[in-house]
Image (cartoon, rainbow, N blue to C red; front, side, top):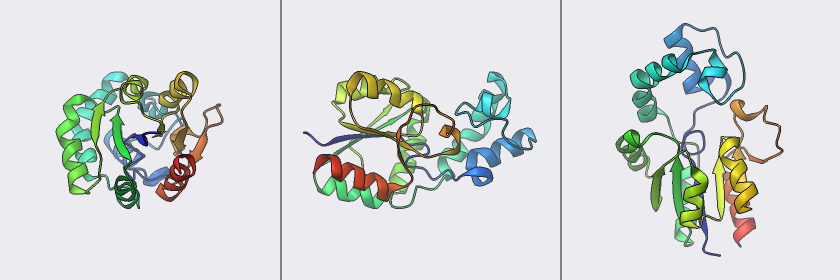
Length: 188
């Protein structure tokens, strides 16, 4: 094994919070004067009863600020640093649009998050194939399903409110201590 792991950014490296403390929840509710979510959907349109145009307007006006200010998850830097020291390759694959590359790189640098490559793609399975990723962590079940079926690699779902209603029984993780344990169990 080459020890190549794939890691999503939002809700995996970033500590978005849970429930009413979630950074997206707070900002969306304030921006649209909402009382809360209407569902636990991953998609903001379904979760908050918004149109595509409303979501795009919100992202255009507030997205960069959120990307810049969201804190990292506890211990992600330390765990990734230890994995890099052991020779692991860390490939970051985010569904953030390519135009958010600079703010993403600045956030990673500011928080000293080690990585080898960064991809912006909603087609994460294609990056996994190209980079021969052997293990993947994401918060979106829809990104993990193709990897489970086609690539048959271990995938782990970061527990978040927006993925609790998913019907597939994923291997779930709650924090970077869990992730490190799963990675070491698999590779070592």
